[in-house]
Image (cartoon, rainbow, N blue to C red; front, top):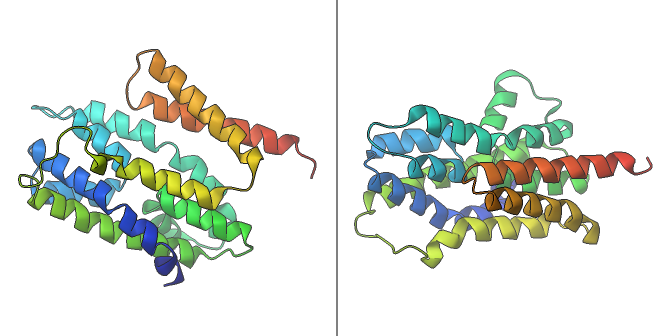
Length: 222
């Protein structure tokens, strides 16, 4: 419950992003059941939008799966970083918690770790609250998709970016944090500049930023 309460503001802030995914799913012809199944199992807004942008008839299952895999590879180092929180969990508790892990709940859990608290229940509560809200918003966006059609560039589409920027405030520890973030941004822009579209800039930025951060931390004196 503490995790659920702590995540409430961010959860509500992600609601427009869920609406966009639901509307996009309706636009490419997915049924409500298919939209909810995808949202419940994948639970990754960026990956879902990339897959939906690739959608056609017949559906490019392999291409969409590869795109989602590439984007969601960033969750692997996130899970490793949360080892101090999850080291006492096993079996269904461990894998169930990891199944609903997203960037937002990861950021909250890291902030908890830095405050000296290592509660796996906090992480699960935050993630589950976001999952329930995500499912509801995707459903609303799908049901009312036809009535809520928005032009390209509408402010609502900035919701996901705004949510990520808000998370950075909680992770901020000082100017030294800028270095891996700048490396990640530069790597993503470089890959984007080569003409490679999604999901490669996201993966390049995540790997470059995480790699630089790990290298820098290993060089620091214990």
